[in-house]
Figure 1 (cartoon, rainbow, N blue to C red):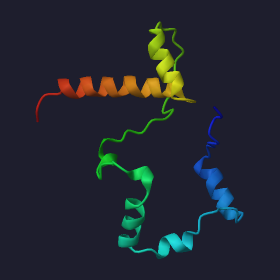
Figure 2: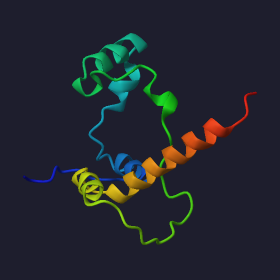
Figure 3: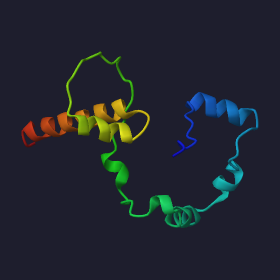
Figure 4: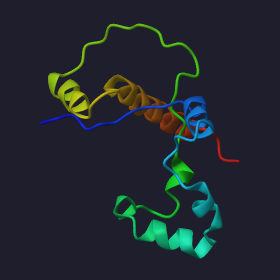
Length: 113
């Protein structure tokens, strides 16, 4: 099976592309749309099927906020295989899962306000 053609760009690279006139997005057309037209476009996009309207409320920024530390850890082979099957960035995904667990534990231990 061939790997999908996924490319990653920084915000600066995307701005440079747009400044050179190489953007394939017709921003004038996007900006001219009404809120209702944008909602209709989103509703008809199959990538948004079954997506809760408030999906972003639990979103967590994942990124290299501080340098990572190297650690040797032993994990079950099926866990490693599952994360590797998710594709590039599997270690970052593992870190995100651990971070979500830590935050959930911390939230559970906070006293009620």
